[in-house]
Structures are given as C-alpha cells and as structure tokens.
Image (cartoon, rainbow, N blue to C red; front, side, top):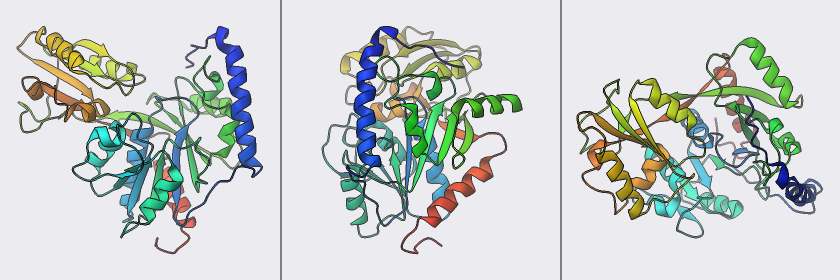
Length: 363
C-alpha cells in the first residue's frame, strides 16, 4: 500500500524541518501562540501531507450533508494560486483566477453555499460572520496546520496508498508536520481505498495508524459520475459513454492522476495522457500543444476529458480554442464511505456541529 518515494539524501533537511514545525506546535500547545475560537461551528478538513488526499470531494460531501440539514454553509479556503489578495467572497461572476481552482469548482457546484478565500483564516471567518446573513457552519478547507483558528472539529485525511505512518517530513517525504500532529484530529479518514477491502484490511489499517481512543476512523473511496460537458451549449453529447472505439486525450493537472487514468482505461478506450503539475496554470502555449495533440487523434470518436479542478481553470481561459470546446468533458468525482459506516459518519458530523453551536441557531 505504501508509496516508498522517500529520498534518504534529504533526511538531514527533514530533521531541521521537524525541529521548526515541532517548536511551532509546542508554542500553540502551551498557549504561547494563541488560537482563536468563533461563535459558529467550524469544521477543518486537512491532512499532514502535501496535496493529493482528496480534500475537495470530501469538502463537497460535507456541504451536501450539512445543506441537507437546512443549514447555511460557508467554505473558507486559502485560494491556492489565485491572482487576488486578501478576502474574496465568491459571487456568480467571480472567476477561478480570483478564487483559485478548487473554491471556484465548489461555488459552481454549490451556488447556495458561501465560498470565500483568505490566507488569514481568522480574518476570513470574521468577514463571513459580518455578512448580512452569516453562515451557520464554516468548513475550513486545508487548514489543519493553520492553528490560529481553533476548529471545533478536525477531520484529518490520509491517502490509502501513502499513509502518514509510511511517510516522512519534507523535503525527504511529503509530510508538512510529523505524525504526532494527528492527535489534534477527532476524525481520521483513510481516502482513496479500494472498494473491495476485506475485514482484515480494515483491521490492519486501523492498527497501522495507532490512533487515540477519542479518535474515530473511517474509510472512503472515490466514485466517478457520468462525464459532463464543460461547455454544455456546445457539446455534441450530454453524457458520452466511451468504449473501445473511443480515443481519449486525458488532461490532468492534479497531484496523483494514476487513479483517474485507470478509470479512463476501464472504458476500454485508447487513452493519451497529458499530465501537468498540480494546480498548473495553463498558458496559451500549453493550450496550443493540447489542441495539436487532440487533433492527432482519429476524428471519428474522440474526447478530451479532464478533472473538475482543471476544468475550472479552462472554463474562462481566453486562449482556449472554440474548436476544442465541444469535445471537452470533465470527470466528476464524489466520495463514498465504506464498511457500512456512512450513517455513522454522517451522524458524527451532525452531532459535532450541533454540539458546537454556541448561539442556538442550529435545531
């Protein structure tokens, strides 16, 4: 299960990094650096590793769950690689450049949710609470290391293919802080699990993480929805179903595209994969190269498939050719809680949020 890409030559630098992060956490633990609480339930979704654990689909799962309870939900993110500064509250006219690709994706899928970005999470929460109809629940995206906010619930994600116990600190590994930081989480989720896990697998994984008695462990897997056109008004098909006659140009700018590539290959189609770095900002040169590769595919039945996150960056890109738009589809991803624990997980979240409502607005 473990991805053993640990660079032993960089371990001395990881030891230095460990000292810095350990000191910072101790300063927060002992109260020398202050954390701020707020008069609204706050749920943090984060991880110990850099990228690739599935924070966005898990955040979307929580939005569906909490909105289903009738609660006004806000999502606050840093807005990684956005071209704006300070606090930005999304509207229907806000672009991915202003928000970052993932917050833009969330706003597109959940127009009734408040979506905001601010590198200073405390400031961002205060701004959200100052709006005319303040949110009843705030989801803090990728804020596990942002300890200036004292979240009511910390949900910690770890990738099945590279658990934190199989990893080490940056730069030799991918951890932002040591595994000791996991003790701050009330809920731990092992993500991207195979759907066919056996009872013994659940037991082995549970023992590997060495969780505390107060922590609840859940397991999730990815579930792929039907292909959706990025430009519905131009698309030739609403939800195409690729088969052995289909030629797919798969375009990805995500941390770990291997699972997505396997899903495309499951169709039996011929797949050409163009992989870019996570959160890649596509240039006009990139788009010209992408169009050239697409036009090299047999014209009879060809599709350009990309992720929702990449689609967010392409949607309003001025250099994207009109000729390419009818062929571009995104692959939606949702998560599924495994081991017959979905209801338990849902009720755990709902109970935490209700318990931490300090103003009685949540019934």
